[in-house]
Length: 395
Image (spheres, one colour):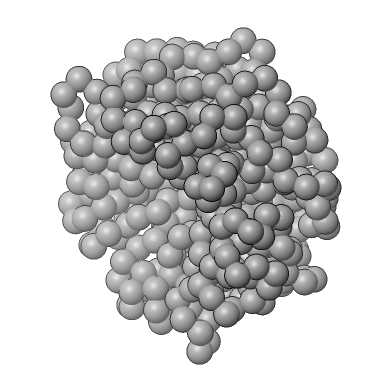
């Protein structure tokens, strides 16, 4: 299912004049959803949730991608097949090890636990499924993970109640290079009187981690907190957005090569149906620089669910979903590239297949940028996982 995108744009050295979009999942029965992508040092992995493929409800599957598209066969990530495994996230460390985290069952507990599995640089499992969260009194959901330069990973997630709060809060835990949870569970959100949800996490070049999350409508806040390489907070959280919103969804965060941070979210001061995609740059200490910027130029309908990717030279790619322009049917994937030294390029329509394309994610690869999304029509049975590559100079 190869398709040529004729977008005829070239921005900041990234060409989309003839970009192939390709299908990543090989098992096409039922739905494949919730893609995530991880890339570092020439290794890129796409993971997703696949319904009924592991013999029970949802399972987690993955496939390698190189600059020419998918490589090899897809493989099953979860070793426990009973129950529903969902909401995957992934990271690759400097040694080439892959960690995948997801929400799923654990032993006699329900489908609302946080589970991880580590793979070596050759793709062989290092562990069976590992239980990450220690607090299990309420549902745990929306896990994210980042790989630190010291060989450890930080997993963060939303707990519907925590050890220090009766409201939803953001928790975390470190995973070592052998794939085992180490130390105590971390309480990352520091506003226990408010509900905090939908975390994201990034690892910096100096070993620090940055975590962002959404705070409830009382404050309409996107907040960021910096942690050291051992998970210890460096100061309190900082509110990123100046403009309140009637609704905010899952924010995204990424480190720039110089230690600054990019934070993205969607929201509108008046109503969710008019959500815009917003971006703000923070200094290395997590303090906002300048004002928040609206990144989408297509403004009809709700633009939502931004994700970020950053190249080695500091170019930022933001992707999101929104209504198709010019009478085209369905939800589509959009993108925009930002060079912090020269400003944003034009908005791009990334997906132009029939039907809806949603839940985009992105990652920097050796030769450009990879964008992956959930396609709701074109794999022959339910939803499938598709991608495209923005090739860098010389490709």
